[in-house]
Image (cartoon, rainbow, N blue to C red; front, side, top):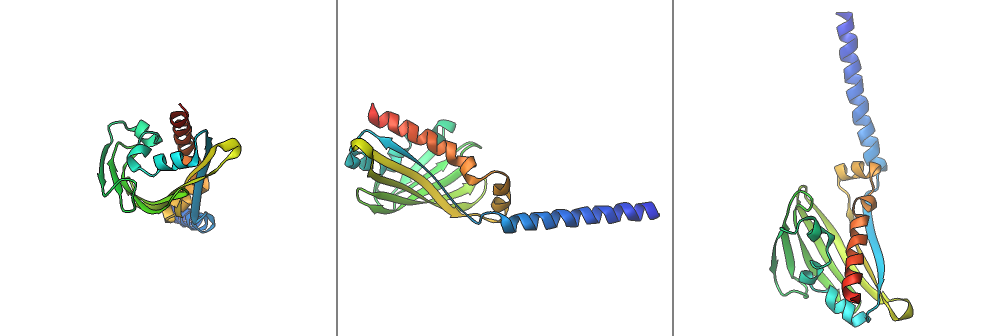
Amino acid sequence: MDILLYIIGGLVLLVLLFILIVLILALIAPKTYDVFRTVEIKRNKAEVFEHLKYLKKQDEWSPWMKKDPNMKKTFTGTDGEVGCVSHWIGNKDVGEGEQEITKIIPGERIEGELRFLKPWKSTSQCYLNVDDGSNGQTKVTWGFSGKSKFLMRIMTVFKSMDKMVGKDFEEGLATLKSQMES
């Protein structure tokens, strides 16, 4: 009987220790994220901006379209204008969600809201900045930022948001550069 009490007491202690560790991790983990990548493209700024503002054209260089070429997409509103929404339903690699253009600063910046619905719900702000680059090139910065929910904060202790999606941003910008320069 005494051995059984020690075992139960040890298990209870382990569970409490696990809960304590999870709570500490959630407290020290980053509460926000901002992931971005930049590329320079040998095209003029106006031409690059005009290409970027259309959600349908973003599909041409999106790394997520490559992960699920059979993704179902619908668009509402006028593409390239505030209020346009792209909704997708894809495989396990891309999930389900939507992107809405929320602000356009002509020739400079496109802002949007990403609403992920599956496999888990979250909302992020996304942006594309277009600036003058070196030697007449155009510098494009693509990124997204947001607040991490409790479980995501714990996960980012072990693998940062940058490590989770940074390579996708690099791949997408490399494809954009290749397409616009050819």
